[in-house]
Length: 154
Length: 154
DNA sequence: CTAAGATTTAGAGCGTGCTCGAAGTCAAGC
DNA sequence: GCTTGACTTCGAGCACGCTCTAAATCTTAG
Image: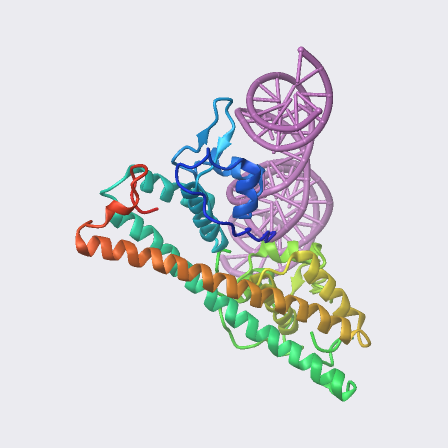
């Protein structure tokens, strides 16, 4: 992920002006204009963004909010297809709340698993870092216990 | 990640037998045989795995250990290329500990950032889950505050 | 010795998620 | 009206990390 920070701005007043250009929406959501269009094509954006008479997109605050939600889901590893499914559920309206909840809870479980794994792996990396720090501090006195091939601690 | 759990087994005694077949190594590391070969080709495995006279790979415990380290690095998002760089440093032997440490610390920073982001996004997901739970419990009384288009809470 | 199954190589193929490009359209300032 | 630059569509291209294939070779059980 390229981590372009969304630029916080005063919220777009509902029904004021005609909404934001795609460039502005990109700036505010941290998602490139290319990707905004891609998300739309991919079916992540259910409630069609308004258009000017000439066909240019005009984003409202609700559109931005939804896109930001999508980035959070993506940022936790939810695949595009699943986000699309969620978007479909949302756009279908009332009556499928249970299914939306199931979807989110399933995802939540994956995220917590991901977190746990990440934390565990981090521990191992930290341990390796400690080893290198110690070795550098001590001046390389502990190379002996990896006798097989050159290289020392792996 | 397909999360195939590595199968813990008594460590391969050093220099006993001739080492493990690739299938067995795959089972123990949780990495497919295909991927084990790919990792080798990609330069992640520096100390060449032993071969039988006929050319089959024979894995020793140290080989397995290294591969498992690679999976931990992968599991925290380190790209193949960076792991290869690390592997090169390790195989070069003594004298570049500082560089190895730098590499690991840079990665550590990325992992902690990743963790923080993941935790924050998880909070948002949890909040959404709470909303749906509440709504389901209450029987959909709170649809009103999303007046724009059908769909209610997004 | 033979048959069956595991392993080898190098290269091709694939799924995902963007990212870019081309050719045309629109909008705003002058 | 003209120019400039942002925006449009939609298909192609790309980076990554596997994953699979084919044809040959090795190993092992019987």
